[in-house]
Length: 232
Image (tube, rainbow, N blue to C red; front, side):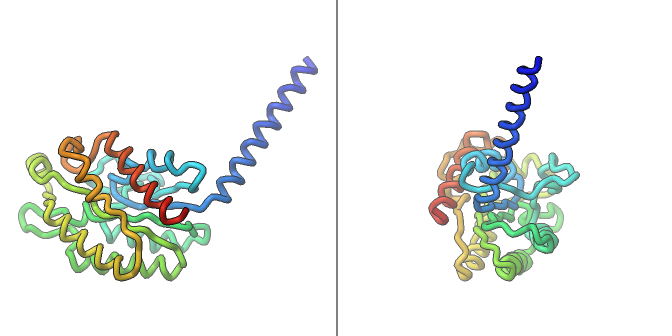
């Protein structure tokens, strides 16, 4: 019995040492933080896996909110550009929030179009202003960012199933173009997840804006490769 007790104690010490070393290794890794819409929530687990032992991965989390309704962003879902800006304005007040790199995406919720009035959830001018403020906020805190272009929309399927609001591919193109100008002029790296996803073929969608597991994994691999190429 005494020998058994000694073995258990030794095993406990080994486990504790492994946990301590793992935690130390994680602290030494550069920190990556992701804030984006439901697309980022779905490729996120693959991205975290691909960046393991290279980056300490984190993202906007539920924090007690329910993010299961992807049409009504809450919790881990970053939502539109105004929501992203407001979240970051709060987040940077925390002295512990100093990631080495932030990946940011917003657009799909900005282009939501009122069926009766045709009004966008976030106008193009407001979208531009929000993105400029996001950049200025992170620049002021010395936090580097990478912008991820908004992914494609299947207009026909989306607007036949969704009656409370519509989305249009033409708006994705226009809002992406504005974001391109904002961030290119400020030398912010841009990941063209839109173009990459379009090249994966017509069977990539599982509904009107979301993608199957194979596409999610491919998106994550593309993003991981981009990040590695920038910060290798």
